[in-house]
Amino acid sequence: MFNQPSYAVDITTDTAVSMVQDAGADAASAEEGRGFTQELKKRFIEGGPVFMGIVLLCLILGLAIAIERIIYLNFSTTNTKKLANNVEDALDSGGVDSAKEVCRNTRGPVASIYYQGLDRMDEGIEAAEKAVVAYGGVQMGQLERNVSWVSLFIAIAPMLGFMGTVIGMIKAFDKIEAAGDMQPSLVAGGIKVALLTTVFGLIVAIILQIFYNYIIAKIDSIVNDMEDASIKLIDMLIRNDNSKS
Image (tube, rainbow, N blue to C red; front, side, top):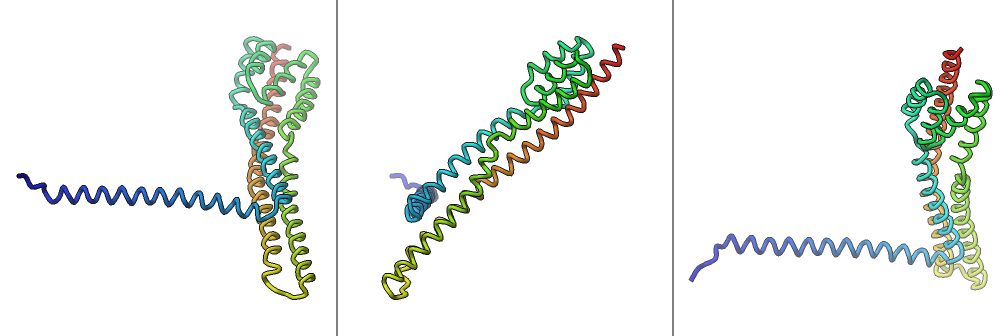
């Protein structure tokens, strides 16, 4: 009885085609992701369980230490200008005890250094300055803790890859010697294993190097804040001591 407009049919058809295309694209993306994972797994197994396992262990341990250091350094970052102003206001209004309370309620190495300097204030400016310098070295050591392990894994990973390369080449030449003939099929497997271990070792080193550089830059930034804040603290203590006298 009623004829459906042709444009409605066209819209329905276009929508269906679009949905099919989107579904196909999603399926292709998922297949590509699975293909990459399977290829990576395949290459890892072909590289040999011994050296590839050690290289993977270097990556896991290096990333664990790097992530732990990044979290620690982020928690150690403090607004030093705000802390210095708060300590100075507390020192002027409530004295050393009030300033120490501000430091106790603030996290980070700068607040700890301030607290140590204020705690030695009754022994004189020189004693407070020595405490600041000594405790600054302690805090720097805590910031740099375990970072050397990351640099060690950066150095070891490609070296293990190169060792796998050498061993793979030795195996390839052993096959040539045993066969008494130079055929590509004899050496292809050994050379492929050699190249795979090298590639994975370099990939691990590159990944860890990025994290290592970020950690070093973060430590340098915090250390600079510590040094600047220490100078401000000594100036505050000198002004406070002069105002009392």
